[in-house]
Image (cartoon, rainbow, N blue to C red):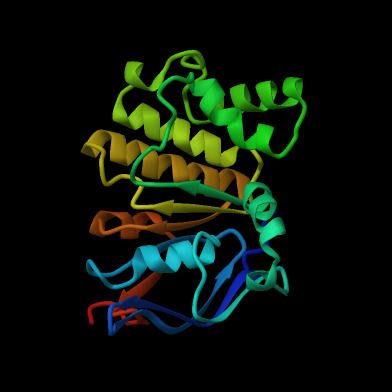
Length: 231
């Protein structure tokens, strides 16, 4: 059974400043909090509050100006660049607002690309790709290309791709923003199922108030800082 008391991520004093000419914009300002193993976390706040910036720092897609991100006791910001790509491939999964599927590839081919990049054997990544597509309800759509799928199906292909290397954490940046209400509900319910049945830790940026009832924790941001709900 998943131990939800163990921190999987410890965020300490995270700051990100962007330079716009002579103007400095503090996208994040000394943000600190913990994520426990097995939590389903929503990162919420108004537009421009720093939600996506925070997610990109935690997922090592961007570097903060200061602070620490502790993963299993190690500050992963100190990883050499040569190791970061493999670390991201093996430990983290990513789902974005845009599905980022290669149009000329089938669902299965899109899904197994991260496993190929890790150097897994062909028979292994073919099997794993089919399994995760079945897990997201697309077991009969393995050989369809993105243009033959609905937006909701394409996003589930993207989720399967994020799962293929069995990540410790799934990062999702407004994964339902481009979907209709039915497809959005299916994606959130899929995240709930993955979290509940496999203990997958999920960090999701969202602006949908309805998503609050589906998660176990909410991190509120306002102007790049942690905020209480309703501020």
